[in-house]
Image 1 (cartoon, rainbow, N blue to C red):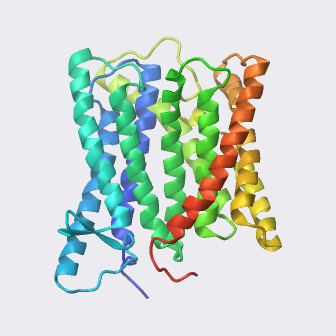
Image 2: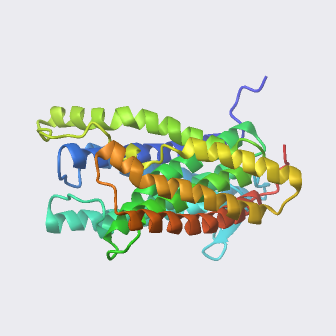
Length: 362
């Protein structure tokens, strides 16, 4: 019986664990803004957010250094660990491509973190998530999470690699939906940009999951993991915000919604959408249809459902008024068009993930 962890799993686990830690910090931080109010740079939710990126970045750096030492010593470099090694800085370093992307995301996060600290020193308390340094920080962590997906996708023929890929994609989707809040700063338009942006991201990531595994379970797997994260954070976010406020002697606002901020952004219909995509893609495989065409068509329907139901979900959960009928219709149409694009790109990106390393298909 094998008593050691499979090669590549330990480093990949640190990267995925860091991503989960960052997601935890973000859900906590958003709930803190909602239930307590503005904050400073040095808070416990921020510590979780920054530590997650640091853990993933340090793990990536260690793998790059070990890979470089192995290559210089003439030892074979297993492409299962993060993908093919590429030369960096004139081949001074040999970096597995998945860990290279993780490291670049962590490095840019450090730069945006310094900007965020400077921003706080100028303006003090921070009450919004759509500030310039915050958007940069969120994008940087998203890049790190993309690298984590790449690391696990290389080992997709192994059970741990397939599971890690689905979890990584769900974490990436959960985290990146917050970036769509920044779309609300766009000039007024007859389309709800947050709903349409969320539809695009959901379709893109779920279809990537279906394509990268290229067998039944990819789409519904991503949706199921996201649903599990939604259930956990639905309880954790309000509890953590109020417990931390009590611990440091800050009052909670008088009127606090019982619906948590970040988990309520994630589509409640995604399990249904994932199941429908599984059936559609299974029929396409049996019929020998072109996957890019099927992905685009399925993505359009999925985008229509996610984007069209987003305003209804916001109304039911957060008590927001439904937009005017023309806004609902235009948002649904925009979501359908973006879903077609996301479906096409999801098939392409999933195929790219499959080409990261010459892994034996299981």
